[in-house]
Length: 465
Image (cartoon, rainbow, N blue to C red; front, side):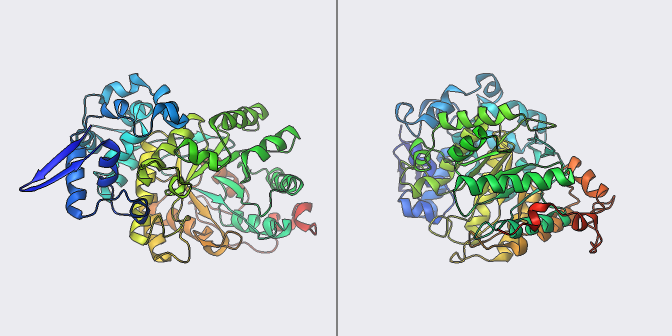
C-alpha cells in the first residue's frame, strides 16, 4: 500500500509501510548506511504526518517482514493478544500517541494493553514522540520481575555488577564483585562477560559467583554471558546456573548470525526453569539487544534499525525474562554516530520495551571512536532513570577493561539513587543494611578493613589462577 503527502507542489510518496516507517525515523547513521533514511527534513516530516494517520490495525495486515520467511514475524503474529489490543484497536498511530500521553491512561491501562502492542506499533508511535513524550509514557509503564529479588518496582533502580577481566582471572573478578557490593551495586545481576568460551573456565566462573552469593547470603542472581548452547551444556553438568543469557535480534536471519533460533531459546528457557533456583520468582532469562545488530548481519530487509530493535523485544517478551538490556552505544558510530543519536536511541528502546511489557535496562555506553563522551552518558542515564529505567551497568571506573568500551560505574548508580530518590531492589537493600553497607536512608557507608565481608572472604577469592 502506497502512502502520499503533498505540500504545495511538492509531492512525497512512500511505496509501503516499511518505507514510511524508515523515512519517519529520527536521523541516525545506521539508517543512512542502510539507504533507508529520509533524504531531507521535509521528507521526514511528511512521513511522520502520513504515519500519524495509519490505523494500528494496519500493522497486523501489512507485515514489514513476510510471515512465511521469518520466525520472528510468525511469533509476533501468532502470539498477538487480540483481547488486549481491543482497547486501542480503533486508534491511528497519532491517536495512540495522544492516548498514551493522556492523564487518563495510567499504569493499569498500559499493563492491560501491553500484550496487544506489536513491536511495529510501539516503534511507529515512538517516531511521533519528542524525548519528553518517551520519558513521560515510559515512566507510567510498570514491569516487575523476580528471581532472588524483585526488579522494576516504582521508585527503584537496580544495577548489574559487571566484573569483567581480560584473562578471566578469578581473583580480579572476585575483587571487582566485592568492590561493587560495597558500593551497593549488584541487585540486578552479577554478570560476567567471559574472555573465553572454554566450558571448564566457564564452570569455574559460575562456581566463583555462586560461592560469593552463598557465602554472604546475597539476595541476587548470577549470569555468565556465554553462548546459550554453552549454558545448556553447563546446566546438564549440574553447574550452578541462575540466569540464562543470550544476545537476540529482531529478525530470524539476524538471530541465525548469533547461532540461535526460537527453538534453542525455548530449550534453554525450559532447562533454566527446571533448576528452580529462584526464591521469590522464576524469571530465568537475561537478554541483550542493540540498534544496528540486524543491519550489521545484513539481516534488516530494508526495515529501519529502531523497528528491528523493537522486534527483538517481542522475542524477549515471549520468554518472560528477568532482565533485558539495550546495549545502546556499543555497536559503534556506524549505527549511532554521536551523543545525540545515542541519547535518542536509548529513550526509544526503553519506551518501546516497557510499552510491550518487557523489563528494560540500558547499558549507557559508547565506543571510543564515536562522537560522544561521558557527559552524554550522564545525560542519558539521568533521563532514563527519570523515565523509570529498570537497571544500568556497574563497572569499576566505568571503563570495561575486557570489552574496551565506556559505560557506567558503581558511583553512577549511587548518583541516580541520591539525586532521584531511588532505591535498590528491596530484598537486596535489606541485605545491604544488614551488612552495614547502607543505612536506613539508602546511603552507602564508609567501609574499613575490619568489615566482615573483607575479613571472611571466600576461598575462591584467595585462589591463584
